[in-house]
Length: 532
Image 1 (spheres, rainbow, N blue to C red):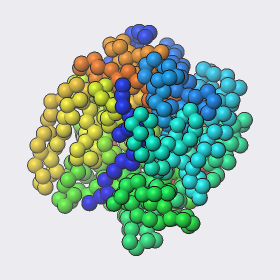
Image 2: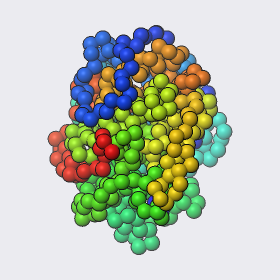
Image 3: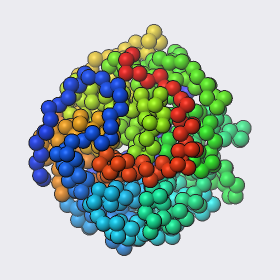
């Protein structure tokens, strides 16, 4: 059985949660129309462009409100008040990275001047450069106080112990942001370059050289490591992949390719610290055999060989198409790395098929299958609690699912002849939609995504001075009246690409990056298809 994702301490477990109107400028699109070709990222009409620009400017206001003026570090989240005293009191490498690329997007969209952008970037990077971190790898811990830039050893409010942990995916998003700044802002580039060049992505790479800790052929990336003491007894082992003092490496690895975690693989491949074959070590789906019948549904597919590795190009069947699923079925897993790499263009037979299919599947789930009237499902603030992982269950390998509604309605189509279906045609309840998912989708379905967002703004009290609130339960109208820095940064990154001529992609995907990465991801053919 695969090593399923066991999440390290994150805002997903830590967050305790606590308007201009706009008309729908277009009728809702036909939810049954298949999206078989990738639309231009610049297909937003002028009236819509002005509205999207306003949304981005308001989103930027929330990120400014979250950011400490002295350290330049953004808080993890803030409520609708946008008051400095209401900041969360903690931040992470992902949050910091999100603020950095959002600053570039805000500059490109004319929301702030070039001078203000450089000043903000330099202030933040000077702080990051001096922050406590694991020096041998150059990697940062999961949690810091945004006001003091000190690593957290006790949790704000509760006083619970925090053991410093270096997360591979959190550092991945910081690393991606550093490359963006290095290539997009001359004034801040020297600081970004120094920090990035000391980061060792191979510190996370299990290359199978240790007989006691073997993983899939090609090697996998650990969830992370504890540098100084074991923060997860029984879930770690002592070792090192870069020499020097051993650390406590997680026994779980990221082993699915439709995941936000592939950004760390990309960085390792780009820098030459992780071999290209690692990309093909990850599952597309788990096998279709009966001894694997625990996952969501029986996939279809064929085996192909890349870099000497046998890869099962499996796909799930959903609403008349084949889709390569993520772990939970969220837009974040599918499209977050696409903010930085134009995966559909570089890999037309894999991501070029899967991205439009996933967006179409999310749209049809919300509008047709579940009948919510709205769509876009991804981890977010929970309108009813703190934080929850929302998604489309049918698009996730996880048998427990990332559900799209409050009631956690489970879709279970069975597993061929191996396992009988228990709920193949569910009735859904109070669907929870998050705006950042639609902004990510705007890179592939600009008109449909815009219409969805315009209707969310018009139909609910879902918008404040800092832009869209984080999530809306569309049946009850319950709103998560909070802004999360990562989700706001996804909005800024996607809006920057759509309105700013791929500004984030251009800054990350330099000719050198393209030479290293495009030949790797470009050779693959997924089992994804718009027609099953």
